[in-house]
Image (cartoon, each protein chain N blue to C red):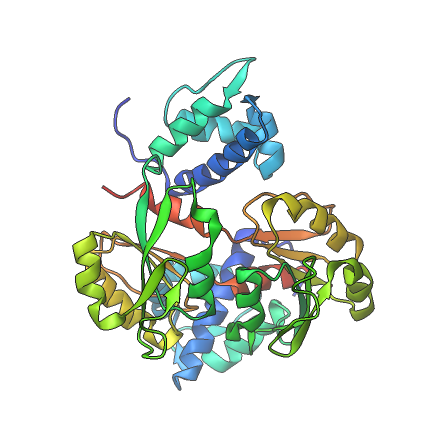
Length: 206
Length: 206
């Protein structure tokens, strides 16, 4: 298959397909179809077929998709057939919940480092991890070659910590601070802010 | 202004504009432009002007937007000029972090009810709230006329609890369980799953 640029929006749907397939597999399912996936996800079957066709030929007309096969392919495409080390910066309630979150298992990620700047938290244990002082963050991230960080610091510290993370070589940041952050080219940011989602829904309430 | 259907994707960007304006206002700023907003958000100035023009005339050519005025308008459009009561179902680490999250203040939401099915948690206090037994959820939500719920229960309970929430009259669900849920027409669901965001980024890592 020749290299081509896959639209961002298509890449964004692949994790959703993968999650759905993995849940089906846990249920003991072996085969599915673009119709069934579409119904579960509220996406048209045609869209799903088109998205997947960007990466090759995964299903047969009339017999559907082999779930384990397509799961493997998507894990490979998304590069989550390996396990990525992740650092969490800011161990308040959100960071603490992320550090203990069970949902990363088997989905390509493991937490390896926790950082905070609060002396009352540094040295404390959260499950298997000791919270480290943020002053050692850059060197520890470099040493461990961590490329992914989750940011759960207060709004007024988010950009400063982001700059440190980028300096340390982090390439992907999942930002829980409710503010847009600026990064250099080559670094990607995704955002999680529950209020943005809630406000999208209140628009429609009566 | 006549009623018209505003595309979902436009509605989805309004909370981002509102958040940015509110942060600017906190910084003491009075005026901004579609250019400045665009740079902060990685959205084109033309797109922002087009999105806002769906709702009226908010800026003047050459003088930009009055931040407080546009903030008020967006709060009104998104219906967050009032405060919505929110229930949280599932008080594990994520639900606990949501119950204590400070980021809802001044953005249109307040937590009013917490539910769990674990007898060891029911009756316990989280900040100002007592965790209630899920068996009383439907009646309490109906009585309090709560229309918004955040769902942070295990995957295998998400659909069952969703059905109860819909029965109770909830119209908007923010689902933290990493599974797609099905709702009846007229009920909206938004999803938060950190792994989906992380997997969107690993695709691009080398």
